[in-house]
Image (cartoon, rainbow, N blue to C red; front, side, top):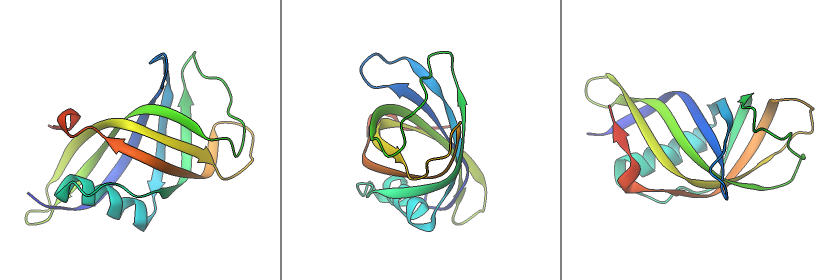
Length: 130
């Protein structure tokens, strides 16, 4: 089964060391980010660093405000709808892994105009197709 598009991406973020839930981010994928995630799901190609846009973060009670331009290492659960190539049917897929990220903007609050993601390591045994 091949997928050609990703719709409504979201990441549940967890503190790497403690596993505490930090919150949930909804964002827009750049073409490079979508290509990288599709490459992983379709072919298990390691995901190269990418940028996301307009990240809207809903913090948990464990959330501590970020410091702009500081890199954070976290665990995450990435979920989205993946569009099947041959049918156009949208399939929810969930992937778990670790990543580094940093805000590229300095606005205060939980909205981040753009963020860099790197060192992305998805666990193939933790991918769930619904």
